[in-house]
Amino acid sequence: MNESTSFDLRVVETRAMADDVIELVLARSDGKALPAWQPGSHISIALADGLERQYSLCGRPDDDAAWRIAVLRAKDSRGGSSHIHDKVKSGALLRSTGLRNHFPLEEAAGYIFVAGGIGITPMLPMIAQAEAAGKAWTLHYGGRSRASMAYLSELADYGDRVRVVPEDQAGMLDLRAITGDIPEGHLVYACGPEGLLNALVELSHDWPKDTLHLERFSPVAIDASGDRPFTIHLRETGRSIVVQADETILDAMGREGLQPQSSCREGTCGTCETKVLRGRVDHRDAVLSASEREAGDYMMICVSRALDDEIEIDA
Image 1 (spheres, rainbow, N blue to C red):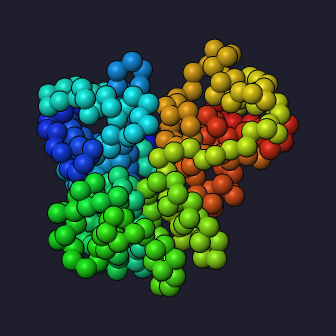
Image 2: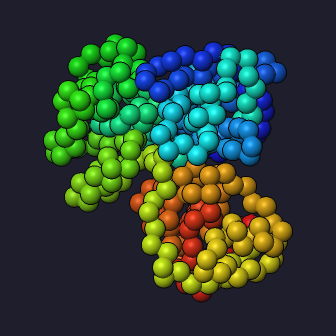
């Protein structure tokens, strides 16, 4: 699901949810109903000085009056989280620039949810949906300490299906034990730090295909030392552009005066997803699933490249 409609959001309320985590309650400034969304959705928000950031929606999808997001003050913030923590107060206006879902909750017999730190945010509506559908599920939630872990009081209502693991008291999440006996037909959904996600990817090699579903906050590490030029053919405009070894498709199109929609420029938000009409893709994003990569029908033009000398896209 992709929705690119832009509108202003008013900050109705800000709340401290944990150490260095605040929640923003957002409503349309014009009083209209907010667009419908499903668990796994995130919104893009334009901040000051050209910053644009994506945040998972963590409220109720049936609430068309308010959206909830939670923002961690990142130690290595590039300006987004520090701006929200320091400058965004109740009554402030923010610009919504898109609603997207590249992390949908797929139909399954049951679910194992794994969250690390602020990665709990997309899990909240997923858990609520699984619970409402009568599905079997468990949540394994790790963090530095209980004080750093948001939404613990909300999750307490689910009883022992939620397993809270503060690192300072219980150590790291035991991912091998958590996923050692995945019931048939169950899916694993995970969001959190790169170390946690990469460890799950390693474990998942022996699982049935597409059992693991991830949402990443950081770009995938890429070795670009062997990159070479290739040509993109743009079906809609009829143009062909050479993408140099040291530039992305997005950069090459911008150089030629074209402005495809984009946001993160790191392969994490999905804004620049583009249909591939011909050619093989060197996928470098953190969005598409293994099956979607194998199909090769779409690519993120901010990071991904062509495996061959030419590729044709719907642009």
